[in-house]
Length: 406
Image 1 (cartoon, one colour):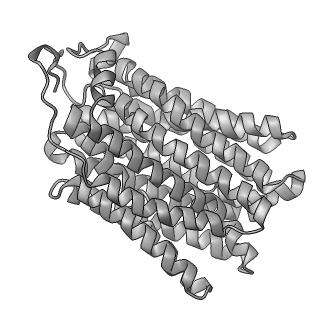
Image 2 (cartoon, rainbow, N blue to C red; image 1 turned 180 degrees about the vertical axis):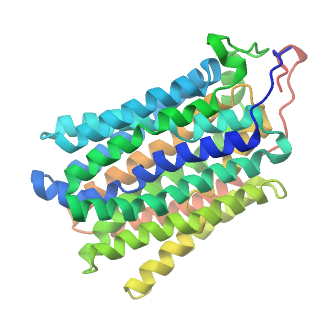
Image 3 (spheres, helix red, strand yellow; image 1 turned 135 degrees about the vertical axis):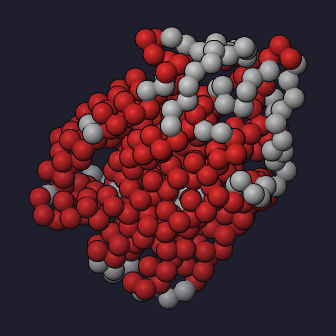
């Protein structure tokens, strides 16, 4: 039997977890605003900047697996505090790195590792262990909505800081803000992990991994999450430059990214609520199909500030709304004992897509002078993501009694 412990209060988990995700994701979503001023100052190409964010997403994905394992074993507190410190160091390095290699190391590796310890996989593990199954999808939707609110709040703030104080000073300010996640992590200190104690589990890490990777629905969820990563990171990183190339002002891009964040608050919350009532695979299939259609209409319609704002608003409803149903499906199928770790593996697939979305955007632009090819790839992947989620089986997996976990 697993050791019994009193769960954290739902309010405490949601307030602290949501605040941490708000800061971590809010800072991250504004990185595209630095592409223009930073590359102009350093004399670098867009591919150089894009490759750093591609490394960041891949580093986030790889490190997320181990961050999830550590959070499942040692608790979220230690992992989030470490991630907070790494985030501050990475942002400072991003401000002062004067060679591509140093820029890739700080902006890519360090910040990617920091995001692994301060975002969804770790926070969702706490939610899974402390929130009942009846409210789990809803609670995950609240946490995801917080990340979206962070984008709405932070992206205009970052744009303001850049315009008023310069891009380097803006990064220094964000580094100080990142350290605020450390005290917030104390609110996610779970009793079962106090003093280094580790809750007993009847299923080992090896058994959990073997079970998950042999289960077709886990593989399908990973494939769908790859699509999500490609689409949102390509748009988040390259939309400001795409709009500038088309003659629109930088303010249009800032407002567009903010609108994505604002409407994503509603989209992710709705996805979490609907995940308690509808099959999660159907929600995911709809989201990916809708993304493909919205991008197609955006490219076909005449471009204007209004068309950008409409696109950003609708896309915002679909932005991170994949997060609650995907993670809730993993929890429903496999239980919560190794949820942070399994969510980390699913998210790794997301980050492979993110790597390609960020890097291919810069690579193909530098070689073709256009983002058109990457937009078309994003549309095709949307249809693929819709189809790949339909066969997912969400019912709890049946285990031999010796491996049964809650």
